[in-house]
View 1 (cartoon, helix red, strand yellow):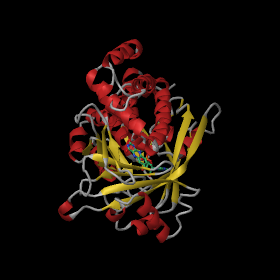
View 2: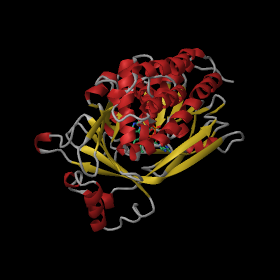
View 3: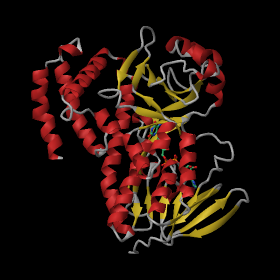
Length: 457
Ligand code: FAD
């Protein structure tokens, strides 16, 4: 078992969000870090932002940025989203706050800006070297030999390295090598839905054409549209649809069908998306997958983090947040151990159950977002939940607030969240207005079921 030598060169595969942040954490601990990234340098060449144009960063992700001094600058580029704005087919918009008050919000941030910002700051440490257009093709885990395709020249070279961090995303080449080893397993569950990005451009003078401080949702049962604000006044919309079926990417096969579908289902969005037809037929259709693998490490030689270890579907806005939290937890493990294998073992033990929990919650949230946000019963329960959050601070907590506004382990958020929603459902029984909730009974239920559980942990 080799010891952690602080001045040794280590290799990170993938300069995406997690790989770039991880490099900063490793540099801070004294390592020299070589990063191999298959894409061109997005700061010099224009490339697609990747899998989503903007994303939501919340408490866990912000905490990880804070540890390396980057939170403040990131927040300067972020737009706070204080709740969900629900767009019904007809009728008034409904705003559902995310937290107990406006201080609890999530933040919309450009993926491309954040990735470039992280790379620049990683290189700025003086210990991180990022090689672009360097595609890792194979890894011999035993010898620590990577075969790397230098895309400009088309030649392949071998790179020997004592430690490899695989942060190369959900289709990870590093994981493919790891999962071939005895005792390693990976499952991948593809969602039957895909997604397509569309744009609502800014109005005159960069004006936002819908409420700026909200995540907009058009919930429609088996499909939905969402929109997140961008700094320039535009919104990036994502349409989630089944691949096949009566209303699907397959069935919407002509411009007239797409426009008719939007006219019928998203009438208020249609006039705001001038390039709908072009974007629908030219933008790629994204796929979504839940990856669960175990273990994430091979002795002290290789470790998977971020989507490479645990890709999740995007419906809780936590994939990156979870990957950033990986960096914080690994950093603490590196501080406690002198041997790589022990640090990696502890990291895997602490993170695996939590990654599985957020993976499952993300799938459950898909159903909540597309189906339930339009359901009057769900709206009533959300209002009761908010009343309880305000009336019993520190005692009543919801799953959403634990996941998005705290750093308690995801597994605990899952379990406490289930108890909390049981209490809300019971108190909402027979009610038509959240104002009529029986606060005495609420106190009793919370003290009986939630407070002891929270105290135990
Ligand atoms: P990636 O971002 O995929 O980066 C992997 C990097 O590795 C890339 O730069 C890639 O080019 C490189 N690479 C891949 N293969 C190789 C190779 N063989 N050799 C060298 N380099 C390689 N998360 C949130 O927290 N909030 C959100 O709101 C949110 N919204 C999302 C919306 C959508 C539609 C999707 C699909 C995801 C969303 N996510 C969100 C999840 C988030 O995008 C991921 O969790 C995050 O990007 C993971 O970062 P990563 O660095 O692990 O992987």
